[in-house]
Image (cartoon, rainbow, N blue to C red; front, top):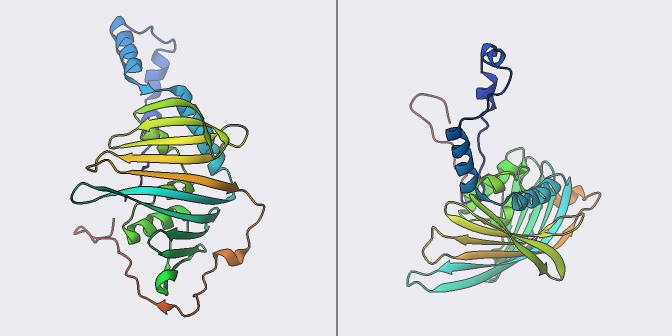
Length: 277
């Protein structure tokens, strides 16, 4: 996948496996030795993540993942580095309707004239390339998260905004080894808090609306692992949180004068030991 987030494994089980005799033998904490204290101070000094920046990010992601449904309208510009080193910029805009845990509709317009629509109803994923009058429908996983993974694998195209649609956004902070508050900023006239993060191969910035509704209003990504360091910048112009969406919104209907196409969905690779991964 090309996602700019990832999930980590929890090691809580290691803590639960500690023998009770060890805990009972020393109920009073022993003061750390000078070497241990120095090691701890060195670890703290090497942590380049501002706790205030992480707290602001968590405030926004907790707010977003708690929303049962939302609608966004966004516009994005992105670079494509050419073989001769030139940087060309393209743009796209669209709308997304999401209802947790298993409803999604998206419509995307690209500046080369392509017009795409996606429907997901918890069982099937419908897709229409309106500009070419093509459509199809395939079986899909039972959650939005798994369906987004499948969709990105099918399209072979990074979808940075899709990362805001997942039910768990804690990996945004887990990936960063640097985190800073840049300062206050305006995005389309809305007061926001500008945050900056650095990962192993990717830098990203997030602008979070100030106030009781910390919507993410802008994101910017810099792909350091790609020659020329192309960027992706998206501004989310509208956020809405309605009480209800029509079920018809997520139901696929083949557009008029559109041709059905077959889509081959990659199957899990078989392993020699038997079974599947």
